[in-house]
Length: 612
Ligand code: SF4
Image (cartoon, rainbow, N blue to C red):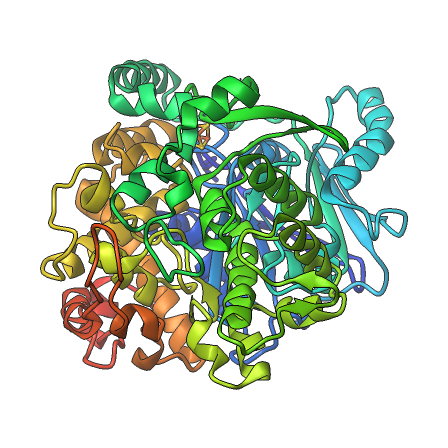
């Protein structure tokens, strides 16, 4: 049997309820069609899951995946992907994360780890080149993600050092995952989140507190010399591009002033598109004032991640990953202009293990309900008012621990609205129950279509149209025309990148393209892809995700946007007077995809993509 290049060649399946551990061999035919990551995870979930199961039941599966590129010398081949049925949206959900976990998992000998069943008591998994163990985690239950990582490292360090290995890499859940908060996330290396869709709650439902991995196996590579040459070329190209220059200085925080200037920075629960206190927002000030060092994902020369230090009355906080999405969700969208408090709230979310986007948008939903008189202005002793940083901080805790009013919000804004009635659903800014990300689609129509059709709910990463609509301005952001094609093309590319597993940021910013991915895959796996066949991998994954969701009962009626974007024009700013005409874009999108008028893939399309 020939050795698979670019893969460890094995998957791991663990059922903690009966302590069953099995190893399986990867099938090269399936890998050529789906590569790994999002594609392979979707394929496994589609084949193995019964439709209609409760995402928090033992029948659901939680799959951690790497891809052929990550853990190799290919630059930016970062992180890993987690796939499951989402307890927030009920759709298939892939969540990507940076950090070293994926590379370690692969060199520990596994391209994927599938968790199934449910343990009676809390456990964690130790996966190393020495073997796989299910270990007691009762002493970790209730701990934050940071505490969990430190405790596991302390315990395992001695064992691994004796076996000649270095420290473990830990992915864990915090109290939010244990308490089945529907937007709980999974954190690795304290600051990298598989953030969206509540996959931390799936892990919590299985009572798996953490997975610790440590590997030392080399991954076989088809042509190392050519890969090294490609690496050098790509690094030179990135150094000379505006991406290398700007992104390495500020990461994604420089999106705050750009989105604000374009009038699409979500403000006070998407009521406005310009947040006045951030009109002078300068990402350089954050770096100058708080950054103490740069940090990068595995094999990435960009170092877009800034480690920052804050000192205040309660002591010193060192944290990293200052992301635009956190600055919108816990900043302007909650009416909060206190930058230090935004950073601290983001850090609190990471420690408690909860998605900052859904958290911020759910809190802003509650604030707007109080503004509109649907909720009291004072709940559980907290003032429900815009920009009240004390309330924001306490609400994060109350939600993570399902305490009092937090219990209602812990199921997400759409479910909370259903419980509350009184037209509250009008203010839940969600698609398929997932809270909307950081761009108001009234001022960038393409991102509106992205939110409506993204496989996991309102996800901006499905097709990041903002490069064309905002950063370069290559297309008219106010028109619906041409956006269906843009979203289709970008979503195929993004699905491919999340399957090969390589950071999407440089592609979003034109620092490299499909040509480099094609050559990278050739040098790593030895397989000859054309640009067309690569895009087919992405397209196949998007179609399989669609089939999964249809099987779960989703229809074209779920491809929609909150009423606010469709009927309520923005009152001020550069996007003043705009709404989204979604129907026009949707029918064009379905046609381009080869789907019928109800958004279902036609037989001919499935045959063409060889989906069986
Ligand atoms: S650009 Fe940033 S997010 Fe992407 S791989 Fe590099 S350090 Fe990680």
